[in-house]
Figure 1 (tube, rainbow, N blue to C red):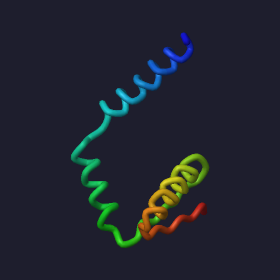
Figure 2 (tube, rainbow, N blue to C red; figure 1 turned 60 degrees about the vertical axis):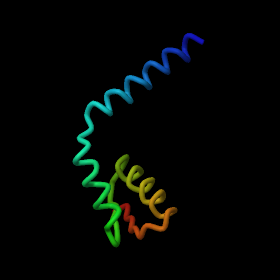
Figure 3 (cartoon, one colour; figure 1 turned 180 degrees about the vertical axis):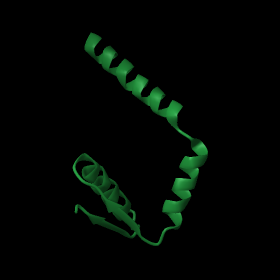
Figure 4 (cartoon, rainbow, N blue to C red; figure 1 turned 90 degrees about the horizontal axis):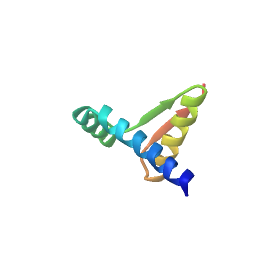
Length: 71
């Protein structure tokens, strides 16, 4: 139980830190750009390539036209 409580505190701290860094106007602008884009291109190398691929797959599942390249 103690370990679970510590994990919950760490996760909550990460969420709080992330929310503190968000610029909501910039986030809204980015969402608007993604929503209105005809095609979204994803590029990445290494760990960022995995993140790009993950986002590509998620948007593809909702029928957003996307292109992904690992190179």
